[in-house]
Length: 132
Ligand code: ZN
Image (cartoon, rainbow, N blue to C red; front, top):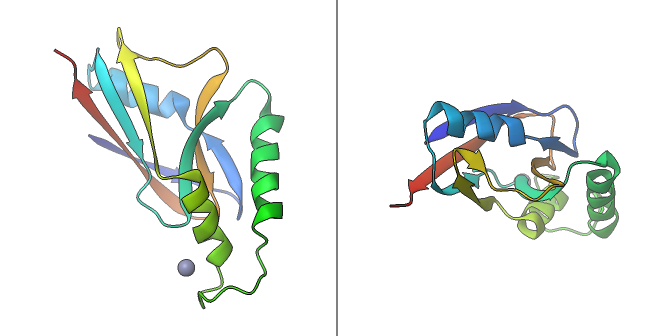
């Protein structure tokens, strides 16, 4: 298991962490099995989506901003209810297969840490389970 620290730069931003996840898998010498990438936060999530066109994740984040506005009639008094809701919509973990030491991803797929209440320093847990 490895824990990455990722600094986010604004309240709402998607950060491509594919390279860092692959590096952790490579450094662990992990060659075949299942990897689980988990974000242990209540106002940040993780997803897999297109990385070739950066507008895709901009559209995802902007759409979430429209669906769940920062100001609203929320009962959570901390002021960041929207970030909690967006995290539940996005989810906290993704599974990836690893073959030949490489993450199995489609041509356009990348892994994104999604910040919803930044800027902060976030943890990303990377676990792996060997296939026999
Ligand atoms: Zn809160």
